[in-house]
Image (tube, rainbow, N blue to C red; front, side, top):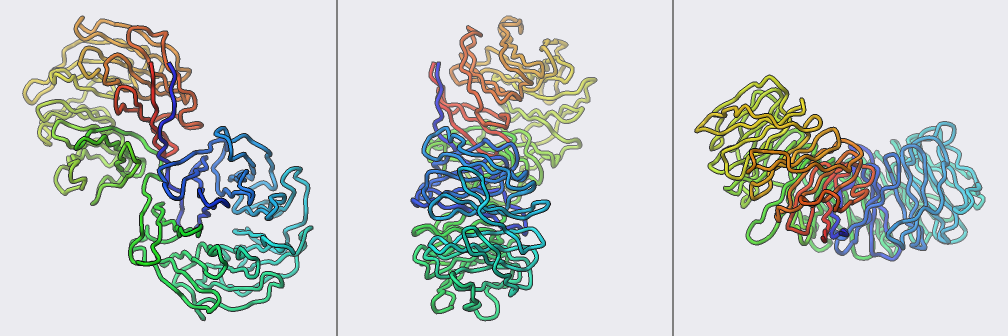
Length: 605
């Protein structure tokens, strides 16, 4: 019973305010790459829905750059580890690993023969290193700065030159190899965020938080001009990227614009206003072939349109924070995936193309804990902002209506026919009918999760005490049926099969127990296999199989009639446990995780 990955919908870059974000380009021009958490994400620049995720770092990754040969990628993390890995195979085998200094790596540069690497950042006794890629032996010293170095670049033509930019407001110029410090450049008045050589090596540019961009001679380091005369941007500049023909420069700034400069005549060619919100600040950019990309503080990746600067050609959206829950729903013949994240964002994805967008309007203000779709085609979501929201899935717009405020923080929500919604809160169970509170009980145990039988009459509530209790819906009240089902440990999730014949319960003791509804909820079977707490489960539409995901990073697809036959998906989201599962159809499973990406798997029995 094999499985294979069908689609990867990648996360957005992880960005923080006031820190530049480096996007790496592919020398062959097909891909671009960036980092989020412990992952390096490679995406196709023509069709960003095609993605690949590298997950071998043990710490948060800051920067990744292709070698000019295109066969290797070097990526550096916050602990100072630099990994050089293969791009040609799916497995991305590790070639070399180095620790140039102890501290966060901020930027990486290769020489054009892919043999030497310069690495800079926040070291303890030194802020940078330059060495041979295959032996790690030093080919020079990076000195001349007394604060953290933000940026480094190496001239891609001989004679080699190296330039760095630092928080001490200076850039430094080196000749080599072996690279030796020549002089500092103190033209900027604030932190130097980005330094870049032009592809032909004749010029290099430095960009700073003072809003200035200076152009220098690539060979001698002499100043040529300041772009835009006095100031290039009204805000700090976080990133610059040269055009392939070395005549133009793209800049990204905190003043919420990106600009294209004609360096030869020192004039601005086009200005791209990206919005008026704080989240529209521009923190990164990349010019690759005909594509001009910029990254906003929202994490969105904008494809800039030179013919119409006021509106990007396309904006890649998604999640940049960890995803807590997802659900699927067919809408107008198309299957959509809805995912809710830890910052309150809800996104919808076309499960075929990966096209996605977030809902419009003002939505949840805190982590979305659970989502489901009711019979009226509304997305019912509960969040740590103490609300349950009903959102119309044809309009996909948060309206002022459809918000139910609760007294206590909700943890889980389930819907049944007839307009009923049951919400489990901390120490409380609430029944809603037609988006209004009609009943609540404060039970003598801690309720964790809830499911409503497809028939709509029975509600199963799983507790932290390891029991499932059954309630029946009578008009506008919940009546305790005084029936206890024993799980093997604190209940973490439960679900009815879509035909209502079985109830599956998973728990913190690594076991899934399935109860048969028709036989008075007698235990039907027990499923062992997980090595750690199970956190989520979902029934396949065929009512024969169900999937479970655990803290052991495993996803198992179980066969109801035979606990021994199971599909085991290892490392579905490597280094992150699966936080939620759903089935698009009998053979397609969707998983998501704290790595903020969504994956589709094809399961065959």
